[in-house]
Image (cartoon, rainbow over all chains, first blue to last red):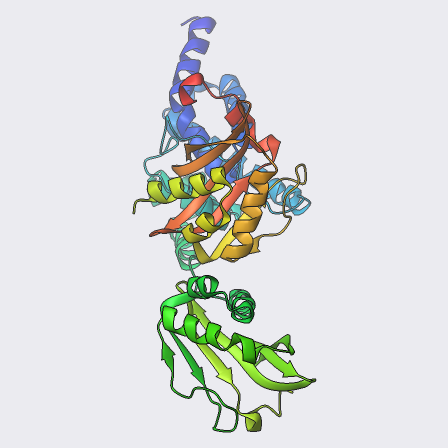
Length: 290
Length: 124
């Protein structure tokens, strides 16, 4: 084979593998430009390699790509610390290649790429090669120059992150948002806004204790609770000053009149919306939060 | 409702500048993240909750009059591209759960949109 033919053959082999190499690099770096530069780098190395001794070009090039990507990922982490504002993956157009060079569409959606960012580059590589490209554990061990049990551990830790961290119940921050949105809607008696905030089977409870006039019978259902709250907005909110605080580790609205707290309001939410509204209006219980 | 239908509703609300319609398609605890790289005016922190998120998304569209919104294949799912005079100004990826959008990721950083501005005509 002449040098020219040899180089042509090298280019042909590389072109066939290129989508897969790009798929690995993109998933590792969540950046199409960085992935492209990296694949270009692998191509230059491939030209300079003594290809006669390479028995499996696919394995050889995937190894080179993954190892380079691990290095780039390490330096990318430092660059991203100085990024202005939130950092997101560079989106890729997958209209012509929905799986982006892989066996499966894993590790491609934004949610997963963002979670992978939090893993070490080795964990990320193990997860990507296993879940998206279906590599055997033994091959991944060779690529990462580690043992098979170590790879299994990397993959399992990564899986736990990716599956375990999605969709938690409503957090404290969200609870506060719900509460403040609720107070705004309740004050203005905005029926539509109230109904939108509520889960379908929302419950409104109060412990007026017979001292302050308040309904002691729970009110149930989004439309009824909304109407109930809208109905008393004119009397209830006049000259009321609202302060947000944390009571028993929970976001609460302190409703004050003439500087005195007369009610503590809390809400419990889920992904559905507000599930429960609690009006604590028993003056005997309010001493501690005044 | 399919994911595609949810994304379509989201797109229509954005194109119409209709905050109410947008709120209807968002989960109450939706998260909005905008990546501008500091190069384009955009919120520099993630935003939580449907009302605040809807307002910010509508504001981003209001700042881009005559923008066209198209469905696109973004990272293996259905997403959106926002075009003005043929130039991609934003790519939007959405997380959808049932009939609701639970996360909105908007990429505005022009450096990250270069590939979208050099697509072959067949990809529109």
